[in-house]
Length: 482
Image (tube, rainbow, N blue to C red; front, side, top):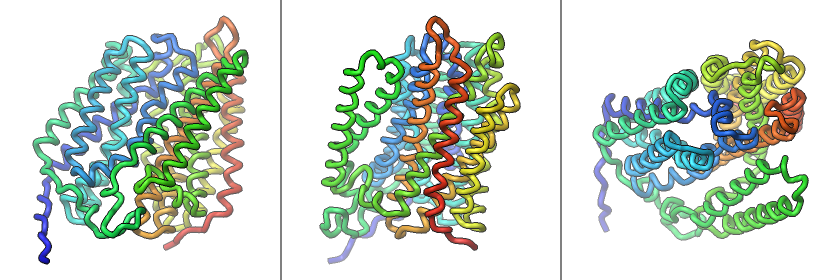
C-alpha cells in the first residue's frame, strides 16, 4: 500500500514571527499587571492578605492545568487553531477582569486569563513547524525575549495606569493589545497540519501500535480531578488563618482534598495519556528535580508576595508607603535579573554542571531570604534581596530543566520537562498562599497592617525550606560539562 504524503508546511516570514512576538508582548504585559498593583487592589476591593494571595495565583493555577493539555490539543487540531481559541479565552478573561466590580468576578477573570500560559509553547510549535531548525532557534529566542519584555512593560505601566486612570484600564489596555495581535496572527500565520507528531507510529501507554499520546486524547477526568485538587488545596491555605474556631470545616476540606488526590492518582494510573505521567515521576532524576523545583519556587514566591506588601505598608508603621507606580519601579531590577538568569543558568550548566549551578542558586536564595528577614529598613534592602532571589530562582530552574533534558530518553524529554514546569507553578501557588495566610494571621484585630514579625517569619520559613533542599541537591548527578 502506498502511503499518502502530506504537503510540507508553508514557510513563514518575518511578519508572522513578528505577529507571534507582538502576541508575546501583549500576553506578558497582561500576565504581570497584578503583582505591582496587588496592594492597591486589596485596598479598593477590601481584600485580606490571604484573599490577595489567592488573587495573585489564580492565573498560575489555570496555567498549571493548561500547560500539559495545550500541546496535545495543538498536535491533534493544529497549533494555530488551538492558539487562536486560547487567545479568545484570554481576551474574555481580560475583559472580565477589566469590568470586575468585586473580588469573585476578578478571580473568574484571572482564571480565564490563565489560558495564556499555553500560548508560549504553542508559539514554539508553530515556529518549529514552519521554519528550518536553525532559523526556528532564533525565532524561539525572539518570541521568548518579547514575552519577557512584555512582562517588564506590564510591571512598569500597571501602576501609572491604575493610579492615573483606574484599575479597570490596567487590564483593558493589554487585553486590547492581545485582541489586535491575535487578529494580526490570524491573517499572517498559515495553518499547520494537525496530528503530525501523532502519526509517528510509536506505541502509546496503551501498548497498541500506532497509538500515540496525541491520538489517545486528553485525559479529561484526570484534568478535572487535578483542578479540584489544586482548588481545594488553595482554599485550605486561604482559609487556614480563620479556621482555628472552625476545626470541623478544616477537617471536611482536608477530607475532600484527600479524596481528590486519591481519585486523581487512580485516574492517572488508568489513563492512556495522563495529564502527568506518574511512572515518569518515579524516576530518581525526575522526582529530585520536581522536589527541588517545588521547594525553590516556594521560597521565591514568598519574596514575590511579601516584598510588594512590605513596600506598601505605611511609613507611620514600619514600611515605605509606596504606591503602585513606585512598587513597579522597585520590582523592575528583579524582572531584569529573572530575564538574565535563563541564559546564565544554561551557560553555567554546560560549563560547571547542573548540580553546581543549583547549589549556587540555593545558597544565594537562602542567604538573600535570611538577609531580608534580618534587615528590611531601606528600599534598597528589598530591591537587592528580591533581585538576588529572582536570579537564584532562574539559575536553579534552568539548570534543573537542563539536567532533566539530558538524563531521560529523547522521546521522554517533553513529558519530563513539563513535570518540572507544572511543579514550578504549584510551588509558586503554595508559597504565595502560605505568605498571605501568615500576614492574615499576623494582622491584629481592628487593624489592616500586619505585624512586622509576620514578614520576618515568612522570610525565615522560606530560607529554612530552601536551605533544606541542599540535602536533595547533594544527591543529584553533577550533570554534563563541556
